[in-house]
Length: 474
Ligand code: SF4
Ligand code: SF4
Image (cartoon, rainbow, N blue to C red; front, side):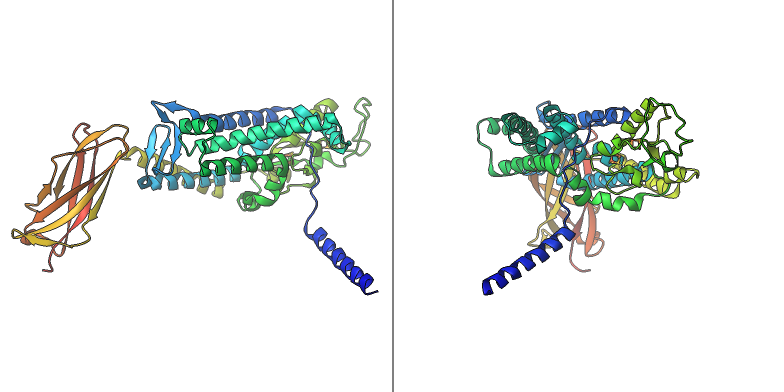
């Protein structure tokens, strides 16, 4: 009895747990999106080819012996299209991030989820994985039948081939990712000679697994549950934002009909939607666009292409599902130029101009002036002496010879061991210098002086930086 009551107790706990689980988590129904052809599908394929092409090719291209995109973290140097960025160029990274954020705000306010539908990493890799699945397992219906069928050699063969190709693509993604951070020729050598370091192996494995799982299995779950952008984008939407929408006034009441019987369906009280559910079958997130705007809609426009095709075959006008705005649906005027778009545009233009200006003013040399920490100043030969170390960074692609001058105090003496200093391309050199000044020429306890470092072989290559010359209290 005790046992049975205990079992009953367990079973009621299990039942309760199951109920809780059921109410918290919905079991994922696998979505089998139907392949679609059309204008927007063509644009999506073009976006996939361009974006993935760039991703897979860029880190493997060298110009003048330099990888054109390399984020060399150990050397703290980023090589991007012929420019070398140093930690001192952190400002540019901040600019790029700000520009990306404002671009996202601007384009989202104007054109909705363009990013999600055409350019997001999750979208482009999922497109490729879906294409492979379609090529190997067949159409949507064939895939569903295959998954429902019992084990067979043919089923196992198809699954093994599909997963092998997915893993190859995912592996290429992982290796390419590491090539952005590791010299590509060293990486290739290490890869083919099984000499990869621990970190390289970790990141290749991590990105291979992430690509394989996200694009092969999680797919729309990433957009629905993991992506924060899907949640906060509504803050950037208004009634004039471009959305993909079903024209309810035109489509309802929906109902099936025969395309070859040319009865006036309007007299039968039907709208243009023939309830074929093709728009649901092509949707990669498995939603029905006819239920209105939903956060799960990634704006891929597959439903537009397929519905236009249906409308064509029914000889109805296209555009039952189309790019539109909430105001247009409500019969109101759509305003493209509106306060939030103007504000985002002004901020985008402002930061773009600042970025271009700052980039054009960027010097290929940087100078850090470090004061001697042991002594603020010392008196020698009746003069006040300050000691500094000039840390000169040559960010140019060529070696240069530099000389140093200083100004800011009358009769200021610069004592330096070398007449000039040669700094190789991409290297840093330290140059100890001493300044001596007469006490009566100082402007208080701290006087500003200016060091200028100029290249002897290139006219416009120089940098001027201020430092403090300290003296006794006066
Ligand atoms: S594809 Fe068009 S016609 Fe078919 S169900 Fe969807 S909205 Fe209606
Ligand atoms: S509703 Fe249409 S646009 Fe939105 S995700 Fe589905 S198919 Fe793409």
